[in-house]
Image (cartoon, rainbow, N blue to C red):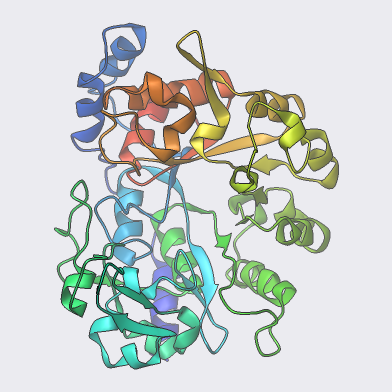
Length: 399
C-alpha cells in the first residue's frame, strides 16, 4: 500500500519545472579549448538559459558524482537538462524489474557487502592475497525485491587490493567523488524510475541487460523479460514515442519490432561487434551485419561507443566508415559515453581510442561533441554528466 501511494503521488506531481543549471563544468571545458570559432560560439551562450533536449541523455543518471541508477542521480541529470534518462533493467530472484547496470554488480554499486544480505551473494568477499585481487559477486537475482529495496547505492567502484570489506567498498576513482554518496543513494524498481522520470519531465531509454543467470530463469524466458519491460511503460500510460528501448542482444530488438512495433520503431541496437577480434569500424568486411541489412530488419537506431563513430584523417577528427554507412542506410546514431574517462590530457582512454592522438586536453571534449553532432549526425549523446551535453545542445539550438 505504501508503494502504491508513493507511485500515485509521483505520477500526480507536475513535471520538473525548476531552473536547469549546468554549473561550472561546461565553461571550464570551454576555457580549456584552443581559440577558434567553436570556442567563440560556445562562449557566446554563457549567459543564455539552458533548455531540456532529447540530445542530452543521462547515462545511468549523473554517475560522475552521484551513485548510478538512484533517485538522486536521476534528479541530478534532470536538473542539468537531460531530456532522456537511462534505467538499465535487470531482475531480482522474484523476477521483478529493477534499475542496475548489470545483474551482477550489487557488490560494486550498493552496500550489500556491509549488510546481512552479503550471505546471499553468489560469491562472498575474498580479500586480496598472494597477488590475487580481492573479489566478490552479488547479483540482483541473489535477493528478492524487498531485500533489494533495503539496500542503498554507492559510487560504482571496488578496491582490488582490499583486505577488508570496508576497504573493498572504498575504491571511488580520484576524478569522481563520494561527496553526494555519504548517506547512500535510493535504489529504484523499473516502475519507480518510470514514475520519477515522468515527474521530472524526462523521457526514457531503458536498456534490457544481459542476464547473468541462465535463461529461462525458473519459467521466465528472455521473451518474457523483454515483454515485461515494455509492459511496464504501457501500464504507466507512457507513449511509445517517449521510449527508446535498448539492448546489445539483437534478438531483443527484433522481438520488439515484431511484437511491439510502436516501441520497436525507436528500439536502439547497442552494437557490441567491436568486441570481436579483428573488427574495425573502417573495414566493413569485418562487421557482423552491414548497415543496409540492419535497416532491412527494421533497425532505426544504432548506438556504438564514441570511438566507433570517429577516426582521424590528416590529424582531423572525421566520421568513420561505420558512421558514413549508417547514415547512408538511414539509421539514426546515438553515441556513448561522454564524461566517463576522467581527464582527457593523455588521449582520453578507451572511449576515444580511434582518435587518441588528437585528444590532448579537456578542451577536446567539445571538439568531439561537435564532430559527433555536425559531421557524424548523431541524434543524441549519453553522458555521465549531462550538463556538458545540455549546454552544447542549447547553444547549438538542438532539440
